[in-house]
Amino acid sequence: MSFPTSNFPASPDGAVVLLSGGLDSTVALADTLSRQPVACVLTFDYGQRAAKKELQATRAIADYYQLHHRVIALPWLSDLLPQALTPLQTLAEQGIQPKDALTEEALFDVNRVWVPNRNGLFLNIAACFAEALKANAIVFGANAEEGASFPDNTPEFRDQLNGVFAYSTLTGVRVETPVGHLNKQEIIQRGLELKVPFHLVWSCYEATDEQCGQCPSCIRVKNAQEQVQAQSGQKAGLGFMNG
Ligand SMILES: [Zn+2]
Image (cartoon, rainbow, N blue to C red; front, side):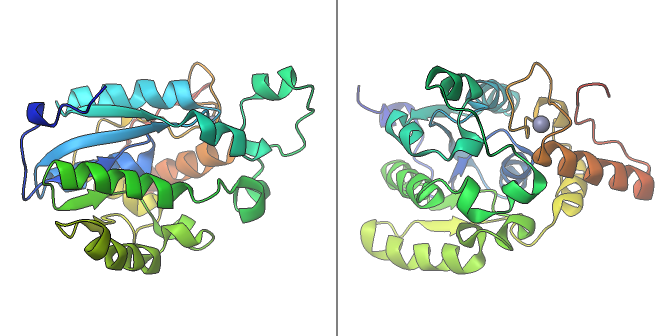
């Protein structure tokens, strides 16, 4: 099936935004919309543990902002996932007893949660769409907290990719990271300013009915939400199991 670029408006000042449905990419999307048109939102399904919930969240967020949304399936990438991100059911089917629970320690241990070249791959795919759609920017939710541990969340990575895209695209697509300098609390505060529909966000690594509230990602977002509320009295409205 060919990509119906004719159905998408050419958007020379527009952006292609990577959306996982989590806090960072959703606020990055809202920030982008406050500055420029969004040509298309891209979500990747690579068999990650929370894929189904992330796809639901991204569809709801794209609908909320009335944006073109495209889900890219990368089934082969699921073979390369670390245990900490592999669906529990898949591990059980393979008779594997999960050793790498998603503890805070594991989450920031690059070797235990690293998906080979994930952001490099995603951004290169986004560059294909941006060039085809004549959109000048690609946006992703790199942020300061993850940048401290993951080299593909840093300004240096973004700048190096921009150097590459000057050659690999004819349009000189540029990567932007609007929340790249912010921590979780600051991202929530920025989201509140932008009136982000936080109730649609899915930051959880699990595939529970509601966000589990117990995995490291939930704990970080929950703590940040509580701190913002304590400081400003504003409740972002990110929902978790048991409150
Ligand atoms: Zn969770």
